[in-house]
Length: 346
Image 1 (cartoon, helix red, strand yellow):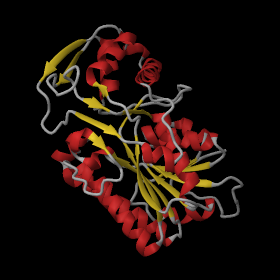
Image 2 (spheres, one colour):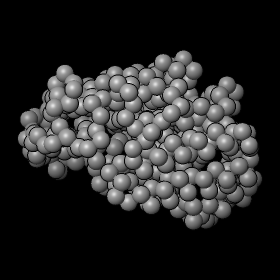
Image 3 (tube, one colour):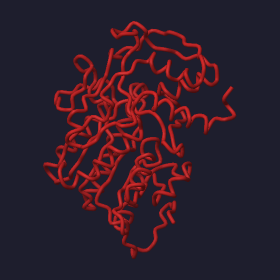
Image 4 (cartoon, helix red, strand yellow):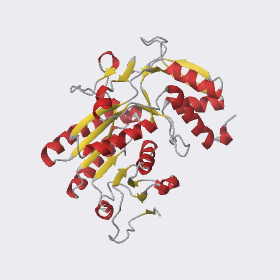
């Protein structure tokens, strides 16, 4: 029976039969889907993070430790030894681009300093496999809007993207100096929800277009569309959307390959296709009915399109986005919203 505990550890006399994977931030939107996918594929996830008790279903799939890193960093000594861990997935980060511009110190402290402290602790504990949740924000504004993960001259345009790229560079140095293997997965626009409708996207402050559009559609609220004069077929910007279940599957592949075939590399995790904001809104309205779309000026720094080239990911990570059609992403997100907001739907 899995458990949640705060600095209360059983004796070190249990050796797991299944391979244990440490998931830092496993109670988050993406992290929880990774945990479920690992469990379903024969692994034993060990979750460390804040507010784990808010997602009680995690205890069905993982051993859970509610800790506040880096304050409780020394608690990892006991956890790593007890579960015989040699691989860590780190999904813990602040992710709001706009907030990172307004409050960069929050992002440099949590996304950069905390991750370095985690890396150093894991290195000292001889955990030499590290899978990092990176971001398409590392690219900034690429030429012609296509992001190639072979590109070395990256120029992120906000503190959030800068923290992700800094960690990727640090991981390269850790491989050279300490032989810490790493795979950085650069997420594009992650959406959708668990295919069994057990977990999904739910943020205290929502910034993502799909859940915001679903909320606006069901509640007959206004939806602010930023920009309708981009150089795209319908005038709204094009983005690459990838289903959260496919993102979890990419982490599973990374776990399988990191100790054998990949030493230190970065891969794009997207669909390889562009979907416009208006296409998103049209798809959402198929489920919710019409919403009041308010056209607003486009935001500074928003490129016409950002689309992943996933040719290396498909070949070297042996991964394909099989659930990432926009209709499936929206459909599963709508199902999750209905499940959690029955009283709020008009």
